[in-house]
Structure formats: C-alpha cells, structure tokens
Image (cartoon, rainbow, N blue to C red; front, side, top):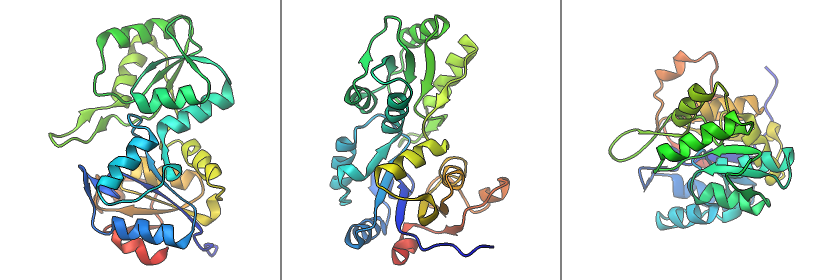
Length: 259
C-alpha cells in the first residue's frame, strides 16, 4: 500500500461526531480548539439544510464549540454551489427552511412557483401535503428535481423523524423522476467544501459516524476516513459494508493528537 501523506486539512461531520442531541461529545471542544490553534484548514459539515451557517455557529457556541461561520459547510450550501455552476441566475420552487432559501438567495436565485427551472427539496419539520403536491405538478411540467441530501430519517429526542430522502421517495413515486442529491454521500459536497478552504483530497481527512454517508463520501472524494462510534454506527455494523474506513475510533477525543 502506498504511504499516506500527512493530513493537512480536516472535514468532520457534526451530529454524532461533535454533538449528540444538543450536547457536545466529550473531546469535541479539545478537537476544535486544536484545529483552530494549528491553523490547518477545516470544515464542519452537516447534511441538515434547515439552518444557515450563522445559525449553526450560534448553536455550537452555546455548547462551548467555537467554530467560525466560514468553517461550516451544509448540504444547502453545496446545493446552491451546484445550481450556481449549472444554471447561474436560475429559478427554483423550494421546500425547505432558512438554511436553504438563504443559500439560494445568496447566489442570486429567484424563488417562485411559476415555471421554475428546479424543484429543490430540503429538510423541514413542516412538510405539507400542499407543497408536495405542487412539487409533483411542477416536476411533471418539466422542472428538474434536486434534493439537498438522501437521508431518509433524522434524529430527535423522541426518536427518528422522516427526513428529506423519505419525502423525495414519495415525490419520485408520484412523478417517476429521481432527484439529484447534492449532499453526502455525493463526493460533490466534499469536493466543493475542499475547494472552499483551498484544500486537497490527498492530504485531507473526513471524520463521520455513518458508513453510508460520511465514510463513503470521504472515500469517493479520495480522502482518508475516520469512523467514530458515538453516533449511528457500531463496530459490528462496519462489517456489513464492502468498504472500510481508514481507521475506526471510539470518539473524536481519540483524534485530537493527530491534528
């Protein structure tokens, strides 16, 4: 096996790695502090498109994790970057929250339900039958179907919630059109994130708690991958996949000394 290059930049998932149900995971504060002190480029990533980077910065700060806005990368930002590259100044009908609508406004997109170029589906806690019906009709009329992420469920204190991927499946069933997913495990999210911080995949690492999104996306983007066991994946679960992380550790605390 070829010798791996030293890690010069880091990408890390947020939920399940740095925080869990609104509480910081032990070692997360030390890891973020070590990253900031080192001066190495880094990003905190999330497939959740509900919040803007400023919202997330404030939430993390309340938990004692000091992450600058420019070091936060969401599936909403990745989706906006993709659309800006594909069709600058386009139009979209959006189902989602401020994180997604703000990202699209910032690239100059017009949000409309009149013959939009795209239907863009993101995360929301208030999916309405009316909005989904409108999305189906617009896609049938020719709008292209884009989705921020494929996660079928999301975490809550009461248990799993239906998420973007589940609603996308409903719309696909009604239209026969599959969406393009911009978020993890699409390596596009990683590559656009790396570009945003001027990093290179061969000297970067991805930390995550899910094999099917975090590790897969990091692997396909050409990065080293670290799986932490503080989220959704157990060590036994890793055996179910045809690929493996570079290394599996108990938690983010085990990676502080690698920065």
